Image (cartoon, rainbow, N blue to C red; front, side):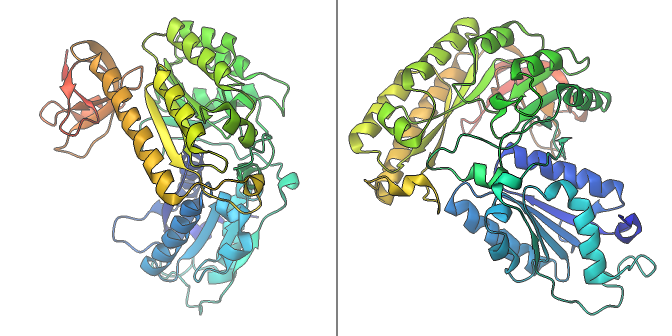
Length: 461
């Protein structure tokens, strides 16, 4: 039983590491706590609750998570510190032993975060609701808890719904969780569990609620979105078609789709749909078929090239982002050059480049040929340069054209930012910006690059 009175007048600080899915979940946690009387701590204000939603895609992510925990514990003495997310699932006991951490929730338990949080608060502080709202401990001496809750991968079965925008303009709708692929370099299936999803009807209802709240754009998030339907026997294409019918939502974006699950029928539907934007993010990981086999990816470079060609033929203006992993075990210099040449030949817009990080327990550790850190940095730099060139050329084509931009709220006196249908970042100078443009689709003329070449500037049509 949750006693919401213990949270009245309390404040919380949130920190999210990793993907858009984590952001969506954190926003939902924050919304749930807000409904129970918890407000977000202002800058410089000590919080009563610290919630960290962790990532564990690389060792760097693990290290950053530990740093954030230490910092929040130091900045918020006496706060109830809760850690959830992938790192919390994979290293529950280790995280629970970090000084100041009170509660660690794995992937199966975070769907009941409020109940766990309520129990932990009562155990740590007692019910301070009857005292002064600023008396965090209710006069009790602070005990040490170090509690963690997580189950094995095969037992992760819960699905925590999430459709939230936090302090952003766009909503993030979680449509799927978990993964059955077990690529040799990846720990996500161990952290998130097997693929599962809610019903199409429930997701449509969440999109309708977002529209009722004034939302105009929704990003579909998940771990392996194209695998939607394992729990319900439905298809991702059926979900896309149903969401396209929701009144009020003007734009949808699909955060990431595996190339083998991005079927031609889906591409064709998006090309003709009312609200799905000409914007795709497709993980490639390597342009070398030999490396793809070492990774246990379920496609080859020819299939990937076919998907890119079809998208650009049906949607010439489409923005296409591509994930690339650099320096994985087995990536010889020859294999990397093959990857580089393949990416150079593709009509894609941007590369998300990240270096391979060895993860304990993954099959990749048995693959011979280890790439040095120096070579990883050199290869990353080459691909990032290639990405910049491709993005610059893509943006350049649209200078002088008119576009519809969904603008996001900005700090008074500063430029506003937003995106076109095909995900070109647009910057509206402060002299033209207006608070009335927030969450509005505005027609603009794209006039050139901004000072640091990261967006196109615009003038109101």
